[in-house]
Image (tube, rainbow, N blue to C red; front, side, top):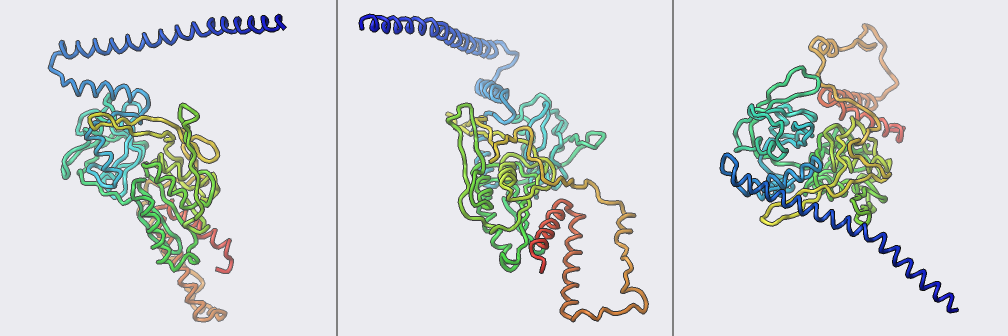
Amino acid sequence: MRKFVMAAMAGILAGAVATTQIAGPLVAQEGERRTSVYEQLDLFGDIFERIRAQYVEDVDEAELIEAAINGMLTSLDPHSSYLSPKDANDMRVQTRGSFGGLGIEVTQEEGFVKVVSPIDDTPADAAGMEAGDFITHVDGESVLGLTLNQAVELMRGPVGSEIIITVVREGENEPFDVSIIRDTIKLTAVRTRAEGNTVVLRVTTFNDQTYPNLESGLAEAVEEIGGMDKVNGVVLDLRNNPGGLLTQAIKVSDAFLDAGEIVSTRGRDPQDGERYNANEGDLAMGKPVVVLINGGSASASEIVAGALQDHRRAIIVGTKSFGKGSVQTVMPLRGDGAMRLTTARYYTPSGRSIQALGVSPDIVVEQPRHRPDEENEAENDRPARTEADLRGSLDNDSLTEDERRQIEQERAAAEEAAKLRDDDYQLAYAIDLLRGLSALGNPAE
């Protein structure tokens, strides 16, 4: 027994020695790391003092520190940044749906400002700005080398004033200037209309108004069509939607799902991950859904598209989305400023990350850039001759007057829908797809 106790004590002693031998270098490494951090902070202080004392001109100390903080954050990724008290207040106003500016969502790529998407019915949209445009100059001043916040500050100005933006666009040989008149941007989060028996929900942004607008707009459109029984499907148009609030993306996804995961987020610590699930209740009552996306669909838009695609609740039509799969947390700071920090990546229900990859549509449909030339239009508009136009052709005696009238109404509706292709080919394709699905599901209709 004594031998056993002695052996156990020896084992404990040996374990203690081994632990000390392993922990010692780790403690030393941690101490060295802290010393290195403190040395770097001292270096920062030295540089700050030398700039303040020896720079060729007087410097604003507060601005200098803000620039250092912003540089630290922007070095991490394009979406982390420091928000001054004014910028933080502007962001809060924007999520409520009204703010002053041009009406474009931008990011930074290779030193230039890149347009994620223009916002519907804003000065930038009216001026013809497109997703994917690169802004190289603002009023003749280059944005190369500026931070994103600095470039955005250049584009701000009084409502009613003019700004000249120099744009580089894929497919154009030379940069060109775009004149935009600044205005107050009043966002309508969701615009709803009925196209025949199809409900079209155009979601322009994800702010506090998005889900309430979608819910009420869908109900109004269904009533206009004559009830859900008459509806053949829903088009959820997320094109050029730059995203917004994660909570609203979850609610919009939930609106068309009865159960299952919508999105999950994963940060540095696995324990900080979150999963968001759908609640029972489908506002569309199981009707087919087509989601439209393009290169300007980002962030919250991709959450919705990815969730509905993974659950096979919707057909995704259009072109590949932007690919912003990261989550930013806005953290208030002393002095009424804030810090926007990337804290997690989000994942669709199947576990895929959209970061830098985007959502790939089930059916790729490009939006034609240019309309046909006038000669082709004239040829297309020329009415075709049919059997009924031939002199002495036989009448169709198999139809009653009511049946004939119904056929003519259906033909007129189809021709009206076809006109939409000239204005918005992708939307027309989505509506035609729903009409085809409805015909297959209801052969009698």
